[in-house]
Structures are given as structure tokens and as C-alpha cells.
Image (cartoon, rainbow, N blue to C red; front, side, top):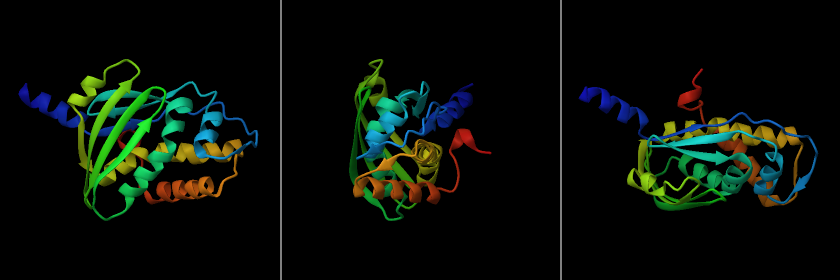
Length: 192
């Protein structure tokens, strides 16, 4: 029996992402200064959530409220993780209406380690997440978990025929395209 629990624990450890079904995108050709503004508008009709499993504990992310607010730092974080050189002590803060967390990241060519400090969550179970606050997993597996969500972000801009007015936002979209193209496969739940 003990072996079964070890298998389950190992199976749940790490970070796993289950994006939702994106719906309700309207090709209204609006202009936006930032990606966050664009996603807040584009995802306004989406009723599904993405679920982030942090060492087996679920964190629900709204496309309109949470993922749109996370977009800038998420792209910056994934860009840093995708580079082959080792990094140490880089912090990324995610401040959304439903989630407030700080991730301290270290990478080497093979492994990513993230220490998460959860400050606020809808449902108020920050303490449980802080008790299992560290993630350590293969760097490539971590990146693969984000591929489908990145593809959704790219497709949403195209489907909405959104225009980004600031050069910084257009460069960020190009970074998003390069990130997604550089990740070889989808994450754990989407291998096919």
C-alpha cells in the first residue's frame, strides 16, 4: 500500500496546466495598447477556466481576469526559462483579481525549481499551497505545460483580428510566437 501512495505523490508533484476551451471570440478588429488589455477584451465571453495544478493542488485561472493580467510576466518568465543558460533567484509576481503569488525561479539546463509564495487566492487556501510551495521538475516538461495556453493566446489575437498599437506589445506578441514555436510538444494532459 505504501508504494501506491508514493506513486500518486510522484504523479502529482510538479506543475501541470489544463487550459480551458476558449469560446466567444469576436472578430471586432479593436485596437489595444497592451496584450493584457487585448486579452481582457477578447476573453470577456469565455466561461471556462484554466486549471493549474501546483503539486496536486488546483488553482483556477479566469481567462478574462487572471490570465490576461498574468500575460506580461508569464511571457517574460517563460522566455527566461526557455533560454539554455542557468538562472538563479529571478522573481515573477502575478497579481490578478483572484490570485496573488510570487515565484522565485532557478534553472539549469535540465531542471527548473520554483518556490511559490501564495498570498491570496479565491477560496482562501494559500496556506495549503505554501505548505507544498516548491516545484522541481524537468525544464522542458515545465515549458511543454504552457504550449497549449500560448497557442490559445496567439490564436485569440488572430481570431479577434486585434491590432496592437504599441511597439512593445507587438514585440511581446512576437516573443509569444517564438516561445510557442520553440516548445516541441504539448503538456502532460495533451500528448497526442
